[in-house]
Length: 430
Image (cartoon, rainbow, N blue to C red; front, side, top):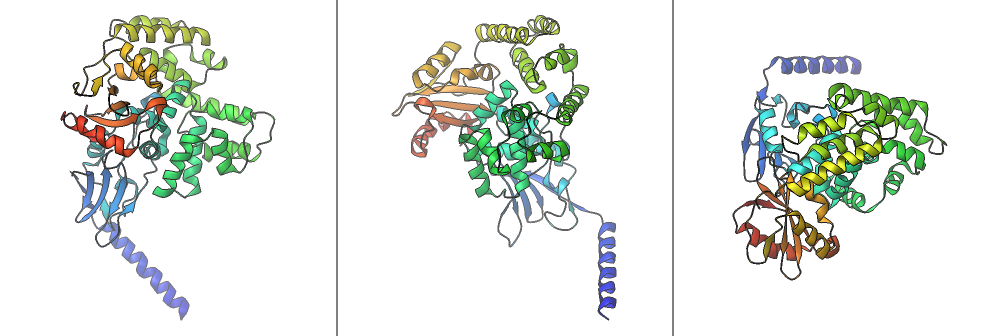
């Protein structure tokens, strides 16, 4: 009798599922509020919050508490690595999030693309190569002031493999609630890569393996590879295995087949001499970034002749120096005001870096590109203010730094913010 009842129940469930599949879906609609973009069905909503609200993805259903949601798929295009993001919305990946039969609407891609354009442009470009961990990394940037600068530096050196692996390990551990993400962000901001990996692996990979993993392109889904798991579980191995070397070469080849890097210089010769592909990509991008249309052909012609790492560095130094000396700064997004002084050229940015001992002059290329702008705040205490441009050319307050690069307390920031908001040019603040 029990078996008969169980079979009857299964048949009824199958009929219900078949009926559900036959019904046309209800499509979500998209609207903007003061908090961000809403993916809505009736009174239920998935909210993609603006950067300053603060940045988050939240599910709000009637008669339920709001639920944090961490998107674990690519939402950002990474053309440098031959990757294009499609199906960006939560409902495109989890159609039952707002209930049975609720699907992403026809305007989903356009709405999510417009939402991404409201985020800091530079931070989006830093997170884009990290594949399924893109949203996580943006979330960590928002939680840990200064973390983006570490990733900025690592990007320039092409050393993103272990960070990418660490993000994968964090997600695989399954403890990704906001509280755990905050602790993880603080740890990323303070600890070495060896300490971070030891937290997840309970052992520290040998230096040779760490150096090799560092050269992998970010977003490579390393934990899906058997040879990676084997190498991490046998951390005492004296050398990198042939399987790992072949995997790395396949990852490089996949990127080169989807991009134009191979036609720009002697890529394989440089890789064979120890220049990993991520570093090569970062170097070429930096060299070309702020050149004028008349300068670019000469830079590309010089790049084609390069076959040695030293020549690549000379090429980078020549063209970035030219851009730094000959380009004028963009107009300040906020005009000068009492105690608020825009740093309007390379000399002033360098002087601020020396005076405040915070190293902001290393972001000269980002200022020339229109992604960042710096101000000196002549208050008590004095501060360096960093604004970041969004994809819609609005500006957000990214950081307020005291001497030695220290992050000022909220009370000091609240004194500074009104002088920015009063200029009616700043759309949000941290």
